[in-house]
Image (cartoon, rainbow, N blue to C red; front, side, top):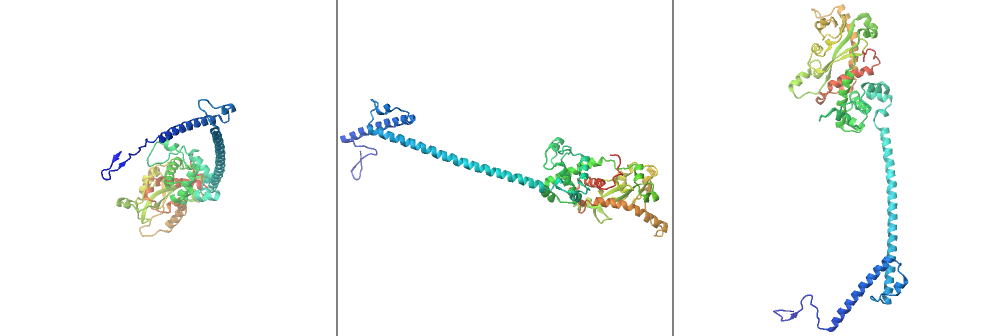
Length: 441
């Protein structure tokens, strides 16, 4: 009990229970009895629910002496059991319905999955059918994109260079480097045949790397890597071919016009130039500048047999180099000449003193005399040599048909332009119907 200082009234503490009246004690006693009966009833219901009608009728009719149960309680327990059974039946029914619903949903998902798989397979078939690859190109398309006369010739060249079924003979170019085993064994999306097709589309048709990436469904970086890789690979494979013919092979394939006028001709040489981007370096800009083309170029030496087949290809040099200097540096003078052979060239090749060591004669158009004009005999000689020397121009034009040389060569391609130039020149041998001038391979 508490007493307030202001009102002087008495208040009950929280939770206080009056115990003054006897009736309250009776209520507490009855509540304890009710609680105990409720506990006994719940215990009995648990036992009966576990049995599920397994108990005998006698056990239900004769209650225990220690725990007497009235008829109303038995009736209530039966109702409770029935309610539990009904609830269990309902639960089982709901569970079955839920299982059936899930089964239908799973069947529907499986059917949709199968339908999607079928669509994916069809898309793959359509993609393989409509994709840009060597398998889907006809003869005219192969000739347009590669320059080879047929798909059989394409496959013949591919077998000659022998990249392997999965490209195991190719060492992939990588800016990060890496061992040969790692680069060679790494699987590639494109087959070696389609990699070769990609390279030919770049050099022959001049397709840009972005276009090739879209056609072959690969990245631009992969396109650049494959171009450099195949330029190096073909340079090593085709560069090992002996394209320098012997004297007997030249005589067998020599046209009648040469046999009548210049039967000792072994090779016809000339230089050609391809344009490049202007470098920011003043030194490189001056070294690549060509007075003849009035632009920045790279210069190479080409030699052909009288039949028109290419028999010598030099590397590319800076455009400021002279014809005489490129002849000395290119290794042309180290070729296997026979005594009495002759070399046909333009006026710029004043190299008779260099050929005297090999006992080889030089046929070039005559220079102007002291009076600034040619005699009748010199004019006829100039026309005769020009009529035969035109074949080397045709051979150079075959190389220029590789449209990668149509535009200025970017400075980023300088690292592999020599390989590309040599490979394009050697591939003309397989695109030319006259291949009989090839040496022993």
